Image 1: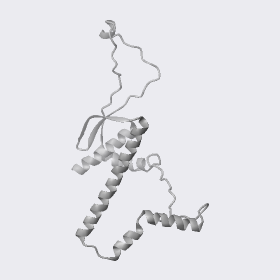
Image 2: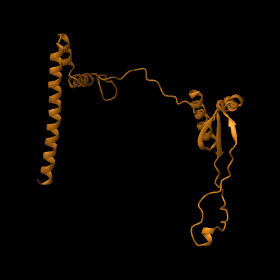
Image 3: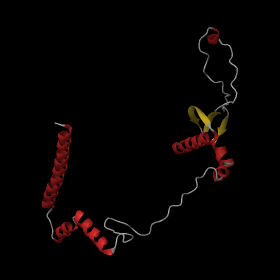
Image 4: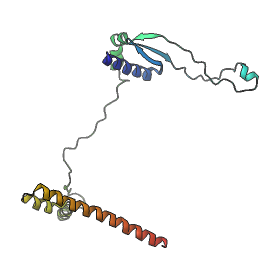
Length: 183
């Protein structure tokens, strides 16, 4: 029952979007939904009727007189009759976007040899990337087994050093900024 109500709510929202409908009271009972169409804006303004407020010099009523239609329809009938043909039309489906597929991976240490990058420069760039990623250190650490406790302590030390370096660098930058300002 709950699944059927969710389906009915989804279908109601779909219909409201497509037919510019607004929901009245937000109630769905036994698969029957109440709805009313939104009034289309008219090109020529209607003449103002003299009301009690306008006769006294106050503001006229700002409420629009929209035609109200509270007809009821059954979700089951909509699904059974022509929903399949309505959904199958090209208006309701977005066209798929064609994205070119890249078959060649470009991962962390890939250097492309093209244009101004010759093979010698590519090897130098590859060496620089391996140094930045500390590949030799990682390879050396993997040669021998490291006890979990020692690994935890080593990682704690390296992370603390990285945090200290970052904080110290931020302090130096702030001091230089204050010196430039005249402190």
